[in-house]
Amino acid sequence: MALLSSNYSVEFVDPLDGEDAPIVCKKVYGLNLRLKTARSINQFGAMENIAGDIEPVSLTLERGVGKGLQGLYSWFKQVREGDVDKKEILITLYNNAQKNDEPAVTWRVKRCFPVAI
Image (cartoon, rainbow, N blue to C red; front, side, top):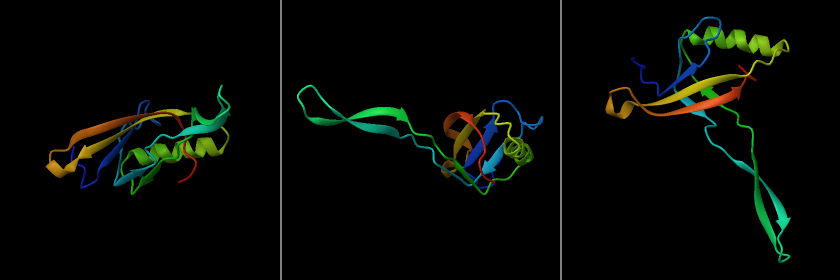
């Protein structure tokens, strides 16, 4: 797969509107996890931080191109009309530095939906 100097490929686990073509992006922002924290008093009366749930993540796809964009626009329209159909996507970072287009790492993002285009 020639990625035209782009670094990321976004694919939907269940194709959107029959489109199983990936969206190729220059950058993807927000691929990090952060825990909510709370303060608590321990058994000795000292204040300490405790870990909570994972905060929601907002991903931003920069300079996305490809046939998969058609399905993304349809999905956004569906969500805007009130049918929030959460999907699973795969985001693959390619190692273009070696010019072999081999995946360096892949993230699986579950229960996501578009909020802006």
